[in-house]
Length: 267
Image (cartoon, rainbow, N blue to C red; front, side, top):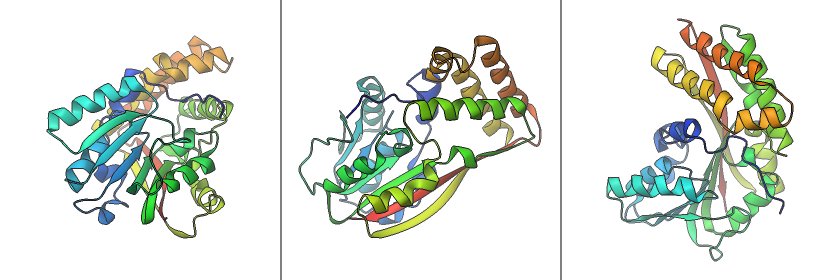
Protein backbone atom coordinates (compact mmCIF):
# COMPACT_ATOMS: atom_id res chain seq x y z
CA UNK A 1 0.00 0.00 0.00
CA UNK A 2 1.44 3.38 -1.00
CA UNK A 3 2.24 5.89 1.70
CA UNK A 4 -0.71 8.19 2.20
CA UNK A 5 -0.76 11.89 2.98
CA UNK A 6 -3.26 13.14 5.54
CA UNK A 7 -4.64 16.27 3.89
CA UNK A 8 -5.36 18.04 7.20
CA UNK A 9 -2.16 17.17 9.02
CA UNK A 10 -1.75 17.37 12.79
CA UNK A 11 -1.12 21.06 13.39
CA UNK A 12 -2.52 22.33 16.68
CA UNK A 13 -5.31 24.20 14.82
CA UNK A 14 -6.54 20.85 13.48
CA UNK A 15 -6.08 18.66 16.54
CA UNK A 16 -7.62 21.18 18.94
CA UNK A 17 -10.86 21.24 16.95
CA UNK A 18 -10.94 17.46 16.62
CA UNK A 19 -10.53 17.21 20.39
CA UNK A 20 -13.86 19.02 20.81
CA UNK A 21 -15.77 16.27 18.99
CA UNK A 22 -18.13 14.12 21.03
CA UNK A 23 -19.93 10.86 20.45
CA UNK A 24 -23.22 12.74 20.65
CA UNK A 25 -22.46 15.21 17.86
CA UNK A 26 -20.44 12.82 15.67
CA UNK A 27 -21.92 9.34 16.19
CA UNK A 28 -25.56 9.82 17.18
CA UNK A 29 -26.56 7.30 14.49
CA UNK A 30 -24.49 4.63 16.29
CA UNK A 31 -25.28 5.36 19.95
CA UNK A 32 -28.56 3.38 20.12
CA UNK A 33 -26.55 0.26 19.20
CA UNK A 34 -24.13 0.60 22.12
CA UNK A 35 -24.70 -1.14 25.44
CA UNK A 36 -22.50 -1.88 28.46
CA UNK A 37 -20.03 -4.59 27.53
CA UNK A 38 -19.81 -3.70 23.83
CA UNK A 39 -16.27 -4.03 22.45
CA UNK A 40 -15.30 -1.18 20.11
CA UNK A 41 -12.42 -0.38 17.79
CA UNK A 42 -12.30 3.32 16.88
CA UNK A 43 -10.22 3.69 13.72
CA UNK A 44 -8.60 7.07 13.10
CA UNK A 45 -9.38 8.20 16.64
CA UNK A 46 -7.17 11.29 16.61
CA UNK A 47 -7.03 12.99 20.03
CA UNK A 48 -9.49 10.44 21.33
CA UNK A 49 -12.49 12.44 22.53
CA UNK A 50 -15.09 10.32 20.72
CA UNK A 51 -13.28 7.16 21.78
CA UNK A 52 -13.36 8.24 25.41
CA UNK A 53 -17.10 8.92 25.18
CA UNK A 54 -17.61 5.41 23.80
CA UNK A 55 -15.58 3.96 26.67
CA UNK A 56 -17.78 5.69 29.24
CA UNK A 57 -20.93 4.46 27.50
CA UNK A 58 -19.97 0.79 27.12
CA UNK A 59 -17.92 0.20 30.28
CA UNK A 60 -16.75 -2.36 31.20
CA UNK A 61 -16.59 -3.25 27.50
CA UNK A 62 -13.09 -2.86 26.00
CA UNK A 63 -12.51 0.09 23.68
CA UNK A 64 -9.43 0.58 21.50
CA UNK A 65 -8.57 3.81 19.74
CA UNK A 66 -6.31 3.44 16.69
CA UNK A 67 -4.47 6.16 14.81
CA UNK A 68 -1.51 6.34 12.46
CA UNK A 69 0.03 9.21 14.44
CA UNK A 70 1.74 8.27 17.69
CA UNK A 71 2.01 11.98 18.59
CA UNK A 72 -1.75 12.56 18.64
CA UNK A 73 -2.24 9.39 20.68
CA UNK A 74 -0.28 10.98 23.54
CA UNK A 75 -3.09 13.53 23.87
CA UNK A 76 -5.70 10.76 23.64
CA UNK A 77 -4.10 8.82 26.47
CA UNK A 78 -3.91 11.92 28.65
CA UNK A 79 -7.61 12.56 28.08
CA UNK A 80 -8.57 9.00 29.03
CA UNK A 81 -6.41 9.14 32.15
CA UNK A 82 -7.96 12.45 33.15
CA UNK A 83 -11.42 10.94 32.87
CA UNK A 84 -10.41 7.89 34.85
CA UNK A 85 -11.33 5.47 32.05
CA UNK A 86 -9.87 2.05 32.70
CA UNK A 87 -11.46 0.23 29.74
CA UNK A 88 -9.85 2.19 26.89
CA UNK A 89 -6.43 1.92 25.24
CA UNK A 90 -4.85 3.73 22.32
CA UNK A 91 -2.58 2.14 19.73
CA UNK A 92 -0.75 3.21 16.59
CA UNK A 93 -1.80 1.21 13.56
CA UNK A 94 -2.79 0.95 9.90
CA UNK A 95 -6.41 0.59 8.83
CA UNK A 96 -5.36 -1.61 5.90
CA UNK A 97 -3.60 -4.09 8.19
CA UNK A 98 -5.32 -4.13 11.58
CA UNK A 99 -3.27 -6.03 14.14
CA UNK A 100 -6.20 -7.96 15.57
CA UNK A 101 -7.57 -11.46 14.96
CA UNK A 102 -10.66 -12.00 12.86
CA UNK A 103 -13.98 -11.29 14.58
CA UNK A 104 -12.55 -9.41 17.56
CA UNK A 105 -14.90 -6.42 18.02
CA UNK A 106 -18.65 -5.89 18.30
CA UNK A 107 -18.33 -2.48 16.62
CA UNK A 108 -15.66 -0.97 14.39
CA UNK A 109 -16.11 2.78 14.00
CA UNK A 110 -14.42 5.32 11.72
CA UNK A 111 -15.31 9.01 11.81
CA UNK A 112 -14.09 11.27 8.98
CA UNK A 113 -11.51 8.66 7.96
CA UNK A 114 -12.51 7.16 4.62
CA UNK A 115 -12.34 10.55 2.87
CA UNK A 116 -8.57 10.61 3.44
CA UNK A 117 -7.77 7.10 2.15
CA UNK A 118 -6.48 6.03 -1.22
CA UNK A 119 -8.46 2.77 -1.01
CA UNK A 120 -11.54 3.14 1.23
CA UNK A 121 -13.01 -0.13 -0.04
CA UNK A 122 -9.97 -2.08 1.16
CA UNK A 123 -10.23 -0.31 4.50
CA UNK A 124 -13.89 -1.29 4.85
CA UNK A 125 -13.06 -4.91 4.09
CA UNK A 126 -10.34 -4.93 6.74
CA UNK A 127 -12.66 -3.28 9.26
CA UNK A 128 -15.22 -5.98 8.52
CA UNK A 129 -12.62 -8.71 9.05
CA UNK A 130 -12.12 -7.76 12.69
CA UNK A 131 -15.86 -7.35 13.35
CA UNK A 132 -17.78 -10.20 14.94
CA UNK A 133 -20.57 -11.82 12.87
CA UNK A 134 -23.69 -9.74 13.42
CA UNK A 135 -21.60 -6.82 14.65
CA UNK A 136 -21.40 -3.38 13.07
CA UNK A 137 -19.00 -1.33 11.01
CA UNK A 138 -20.04 2.32 11.46
CA UNK A 139 -18.67 5.11 9.25
CA UNK A 140 -19.40 8.83 8.92
CA UNK A 141 -17.80 11.24 6.45
CA UNK A 142 -18.35 14.79 5.30
CA UNK A 143 -19.12 15.83 1.73
CA UNK A 144 -17.04 18.90 0.95
CA UNK A 145 -18.79 19.81 -2.32
CA UNK A 146 -22.10 19.65 -0.43
CA UNK A 147 -21.02 22.32 2.04
CA UNK A 148 -22.94 25.59 1.80
CA UNK A 149 -22.31 28.96 3.36
CA UNK A 150 -23.82 32.42 3.54
CA UNK A 151 -23.15 35.23 2.88
CA UNK A 152 -21.36 34.49 -0.40
CA UNK A 153 -17.66 34.89 0.33
CA UNK A 154 -15.27 34.61 -2.61
CA UNK A 155 -12.40 33.59 -0.37
CA UNK A 156 -14.33 30.57 0.90
CA UNK A 157 -15.05 29.50 -2.67
CA UNK A 158 -11.32 29.74 -3.39
CA UNK A 159 -10.56 27.82 -0.18
CA UNK A 160 -12.88 25.04 -1.34
CA UNK A 161 -11.23 24.88 -4.76
CA UNK A 162 -7.76 24.60 -3.25
CA UNK A 163 -8.85 22.05 -0.64
CA UNK A 164 -10.38 19.85 -3.34
CA UNK A 165 -7.14 19.97 -5.32
CA UNK A 166 -5.06 19.16 -2.25
CA UNK A 167 -7.20 16.18 -1.28
CA UNK A 168 -7.45 14.78 -4.79
CA UNK A 169 -3.72 15.31 -5.19
CA UNK A 170 -3.40 12.93 -2.25
CA UNK A 171 -5.57 10.37 -4.11
CA UNK A 172 -8.31 10.97 -1.54
CA UNK A 173 -12.04 11.71 -1.97
CA UNK A 174 -13.14 14.94 -0.24
CA UNK A 175 -16.78 14.31 -1.22
CA UNK A 176 -16.75 10.96 0.58
CA UNK A 177 -20.18 11.33 2.15
CA UNK A 178 -21.97 10.69 -1.15
CA UNK A 179 -19.70 7.71 -1.96
CA UNK A 180 -20.10 5.75 1.28
CA UNK A 181 -22.90 3.53 0.05
CA UNK A 182 -21.10 2.71 -3.18
CA UNK A 183 -17.91 1.84 -1.29
CA UNK A 184 -19.79 -0.34 1.20
CA UNK A 185 -21.51 -2.31 -1.56
CA UNK A 186 -18.21 -2.80 -3.37
CA UNK A 187 -16.69 -4.02 -0.10
CA UNK A 188 -19.34 -6.74 0.03
CA UNK A 189 -21.75 -5.44 2.67
CA UNK A 190 -25.38 -6.31 2.06
CA UNK A 191 -27.07 -5.27 5.31
CA UNK A 192 -26.71 -1.48 5.13
CA UNK A 193 -28.53 1.28 7.02
CA UNK A 194 -27.73 4.70 5.51
CA UNK A 195 -28.41 8.04 7.14
CA UNK A 196 -27.11 11.59 7.15
CA UNK A 197 -26.64 14.42 9.59
CA UNK A 198 -25.15 17.90 9.55
CA UNK A 199 -22.81 20.15 11.43
CA UNK A 200 -24.03 23.74 11.46
CA UNK A 201 -22.00 26.81 12.38
CA UNK A 202 -24.43 29.69 12.72
CA UNK A 203 -24.24 31.20 16.21
CA UNK A 204 -21.55 33.83 16.86
CA UNK A 205 -19.56 31.41 19.03
CA UNK A 206 -19.78 28.58 16.48
CA UNK A 207 -18.82 30.87 13.60
CA UNK A 208 -15.88 32.25 15.53
CA UNK A 209 -14.56 28.82 16.46
CA UNK A 210 -14.91 27.48 12.91
CA UNK A 211 -13.34 30.54 11.32
CA UNK A 212 -10.51 30.76 13.85
CA UNK A 213 -9.59 27.16 13.12
CA UNK A 214 -9.64 27.46 9.36
CA UNK A 215 -8.01 30.89 9.21
CA UNK A 216 -5.07 29.42 11.14
CA UNK A 217 -5.08 26.20 9.15
CA UNK A 218 -4.81 27.95 5.79
CA UNK A 219 -1.70 29.73 7.09
CA UNK A 220 0.02 27.20 9.36
CA UNK A 221 -1.19 23.63 8.80
CA UNK A 222 -0.63 20.97 6.17
CA UNK A 223 -3.15 22.87 4.03
CA UNK A 224 -0.70 25.78 3.73
CA UNK A 225 2.30 23.52 3.20
CA UNK A 226 0.68 21.44 0.47
CA UNK A 227 -0.93 24.43 -1.26
CA UNK A 228 2.42 26.21 -1.56
CA UNK A 229 4.51 23.14 -2.37
CA UNK A 230 2.15 22.19 -5.21
CA UNK A 231 1.82 25.69 -6.63
CA UNK A 232 -1.86 26.00 -5.75
CA UNK A 233 -1.49 29.19 -3.71
CA UNK A 234 1.19 31.62 -2.64
CA UNK A 235 1.30 33.34 0.74
CA UNK A 236 -0.63 36.50 -0.29
CA UNK A 237 -3.57 34.35 -1.41
CA UNK A 238 -3.45 32.32 1.80
CA UNK A 239 -3.53 35.58 3.77
CA UNK A 240 -6.65 36.60 1.85
CA UNK A 241 -8.28 33.23 2.57
CA UNK A 242 -7.62 33.65 6.28
CA UNK A 243 -9.12 37.13 6.21
CA UNK A 244 -12.10 35.84 4.26
CA UNK A 245 -12.87 33.28 6.97
CA UNK A 246 -12.89 36.05 9.56
CA UNK A 247 -15.07 38.25 7.34
CA UNK A 248 -17.58 35.41 7.02
CA UNK A 249 -17.60 34.81 10.78
CA UNK A 250 -18.29 38.49 11.48
CA UNK A 251 -21.50 38.49 9.43
CA UNK A 252 -24.50 38.39 11.78
CA UNK A 253 -26.31 36.09 9.33
CA UNK A 254 -23.29 33.85 8.76
CA UNK A 255 -24.19 30.21 8.10
CA UNK A 256 -21.97 27.22 7.29
CA UNK A 257 -23.50 23.78 6.81
CA UNK A 258 -21.44 20.58 6.64
CA UNK A 259 -23.42 17.52 5.41
CA UNK A 260 -22.21 14.09 6.47
CA UNK A 261 -23.12 10.65 5.18
CA UNK A 262 -23.42 7.78 7.67
CA UNK A 263 -23.65 4.01 7.37
CA UNK A 264 -24.34 1.18 9.78
CA UNK A 265 -22.99 -1.96 8.13
CA UNK A 266 -23.93 -5.32 9.59
CA UNK A 267 -21.10 -7.83 9.36
